[in-house]
Length: 584
Image (cartoon, rainbow, N blue to C red; front, top):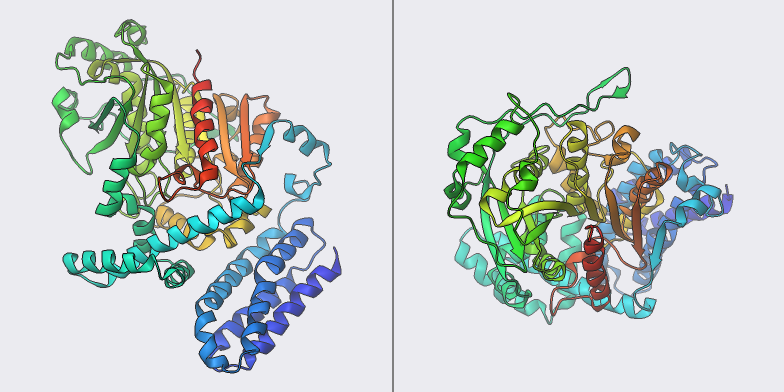
């Protein structure tokens, strides 16, 4: 290990301590820096990732912090000027505490891990043949575009925060809108509000910001006006038809067991729930809300042949499970034959099918009149923690492949799952469950920046990006994960439904062809690289694109007025990549 790196890091930290020691009331900051120094000294070993980690945090956090302190102490009135820096300094200290938490995990990474090897290693050479790194714009132009976009995020953060202090809805709305308008010219105030909120984020803040397109009447109406038009847009409510099963892998003698299809246990009162009118009746907890988008005219069937539904139930229920070709025979003249099941992201705590229409509508139009997009609104945390969201997606998947043909003028010849972030995680979860129980496996997967590992004790260098990410900072992601798993039996270190990265090869080998899109500055990309490396070793068919200079959540960055112009080619590319997953 280069001793200069650890020496420089410790030197900069000590200098920060000395400067802070000249101020009153900053003992908490000094203590945190002192604890980090102890942690670094304790785990100072000759490990390639430890060196990378120190270089990153020194260059990106500690040294800029020291420069700000030097600037502050060069002022005549330090106490007065401190008010300008205090929020940023608080955020620095918060991130130093996060660094202290994961330092022990850095040195635990095995030396034969992919990220411990140089890019000249044969494993990287082979892997990079399957990964395409894409440049979107020159770095300076891209940086300017994102600076503008980050200001829009700050405006949204201010908008969400301003009204939260008032219990009266009317007063809250007035304060939000008037205050939000003022923030258009008071950009630094909006930035300060954002910094304060992401330092110690509350769940209400995260939900408010990430779901601003749903919760704000202004943004919601703006989206409705600016979204591209589609021929069909309707909402249905799918009842739960299948008894819930635990999302667990069962294994004997350390070998995972794959089962032949034995049929499903159906719910009580099944045939009442199969009535077509049920699809139009809302229920927050007893049904799954689904948004249907298509370039074709899709209608609910008013003349449902219930004898065919009874036959289908007989085929798939655990009492009969005699598989036939009914699915292929029924609705064979339907024009819509390609199905996309879209699963939105949002850390399992926020967002919706509505907030992702800026691109799902484009998908529908690009795929043409022989395709349909089902976009699910699964139940969110903390009201519904793991595995409720995954169960919702699984139930919808089963409804689509078994029953959708009876109620809509479609036939499911091909089905592709598409998910971003948390949605990508659950798309893989549905595949694993289909593989395990002998159910029809999707024909393809399109995943954008999927969360393939929820075990925060497993370190890779990309996780460091979360310390400087302004869209999905580490503080916010940590909160969302906590809310998803709190008071559950979820164990991401052993449960592949939470961490697909650790799934057994016996499952990975049956995964369909897939395309994965990631940002080079996304903290989730490292685990995704390790995931596709496992696919490569199994000779699986996949495409991975990494967009240079781009961070997490980019599919949602092309909202009119607030858009990042460089993202447009990615959205256009996603349309084509999705189409390629269908067999022509």
